[in-house]
Length: 391
Figure (cartoon, rainbow, N blue to C red):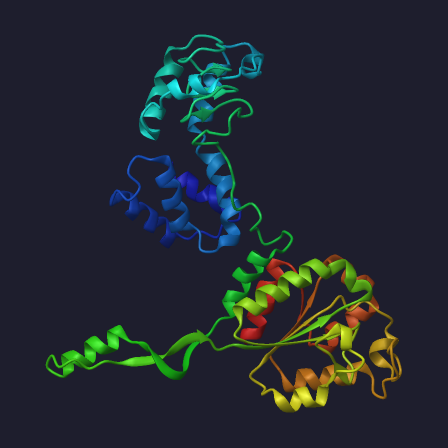
């Protein structure tokens, strides 16, 4: 059965390998999961899934493959009227009645009892406290009340079931979906490169043990600098105009980047980069930072990330005076080339859907200027961009 599960996962797009599969088998051999379906689920997910973005695919494949309760229930349902699962009774319970209801004794006992009831029950049942049905106090069915039950065949009444089959907690982590702050953080972490710099102010346990042992037991305390992400990032964000439709995703990217990178500098521009950018939109006409100053100030080991839809008149990129806000003596393409020459590890993240890029001339021009290092602002695109920033 597990061999089929392995192939089910691969068909679902989860990149599981034989190594992970053997890890799962070893965990089962060591009785890590015991006899609990929940324990097995978490063991399988931990062993087989290497990236959180595949959790949703794993959950769907798991639910599809392990349908023990559903299959047993379908066998029973085939002998019953089609409306067996319809909720016919809405029953209200007093606090006194609820206080009298006791749990069966945990998940294992609950599943054992359910199997027995499926074998014994011969027809539809509603109300009551034993059979699988609706509107009662039985642990099995729906529409009633039991503090420890399994919801089968319909909506819950009291939201108290300990197991709701096929509930997927990570359905927002697939790499083709819309971004969120948490998802962006997960992707940005792949750009981490840890180092220990600065004052030695953290107690080094391993170093102290080693030094003490070498000193024949004489205590020798050791300290070391704090460990932090050494990657440095320059973030340029397009704001205003057509970017208004992408404000939320850009805010999420900005928020995630600020929390993930200790060395982060950010600037804003409109449509395209010219001779200056700004940090405060309210004072952008009075307080600006020139691009030559940025090139002089920040060393080339900074990673440059530009975020914008690159959707504008081509003249704004290739012609002097093309800016719609001021007269630029040199074309935006010249300024972008200076930036990318200085910071050779760079990417352009575009929130516009990738299938529209070929229909916008300015996007094509921008892609050429950044050496085709333009990626869509999705989790998949962010992963691709991070790999480009590493190279």
